[in-house]
Image 1 (cartoon, rainbow, N blue to C red):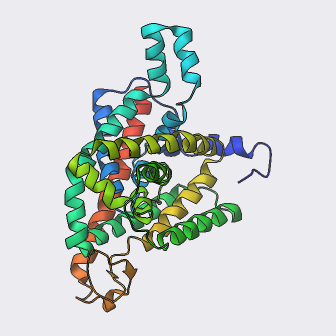
Image 2 (image 1 turned 90 degrees about the vertical axis):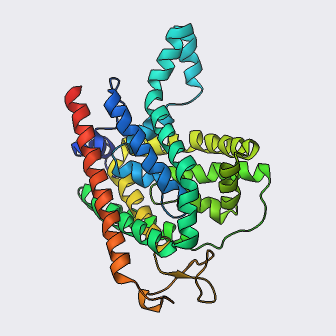
Image 3 (image 1 turned 60 degrees about the horizontal axis):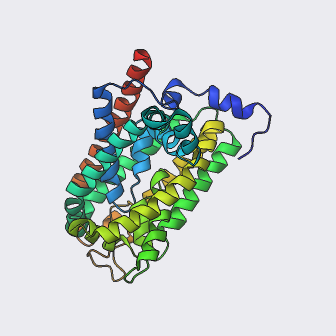
Length: 338
């Protein structure tokens, strides 16, 4: 992902449309209304992250807060200690808080946490008992996301098309890997958390699906239900470690090669359609909670259910379009206020 001319990286990062760059610099004067919007977007991210195959990063990208999220996370590092010492005491703490855009992160995490605590059981129940319905909804959501993001990529060329295809192929391969089984140990959960959070940040690569691949998904859901603090803290420690290492790389790519990186991320999202395909059966062609093999709609044991599935796909597409419109609108409002 290198520039063919010395100034291409600069031109790419500075010539993007306004709705691509509005969130690249963290606002310093967000209103209570704007932070409430961040909280709601966090809830949408959390709901998506619960579903194996749907990424919270996809929601962040379409909602217009992705770059701000990456910038905030990428600002966390050892240098913050020197910032704190230079200012000292309360002033140092407030400078560190401002530098990492901590209020934004706090409201976003509160929204994500709210969804995980309140919706995990509901979504798991739907996945177990009504998989066709929930997969149809998310399939429509992901299709609409891909179409919207494709319009954001300016000046298509061979390199960007190649990155899109690369992202698509990688996501398809990940979605097709066999699932691991067994009871994970705490060190393994730490490792799984570090890998899953990297996927969770990447649009199109589901962190919960990575946990499913690694055989840790059911353990994590059970820990959330039962408030198993040992498991939750171990997983969060792994996630924090992976997050701090990975976001610095992603922040650098987005700041220098926004359009190329967006093409790659859109490919990831397009590839995830393999995982969220609604019509699934198990190895014997039956319907149960273990059904992961995609089949044609007319080969589905109980029929395609066209009216229901297409209606839910349309609902998902409409909701993600509204979320995209809201994201652009709130970003535009912030630009005017500043």
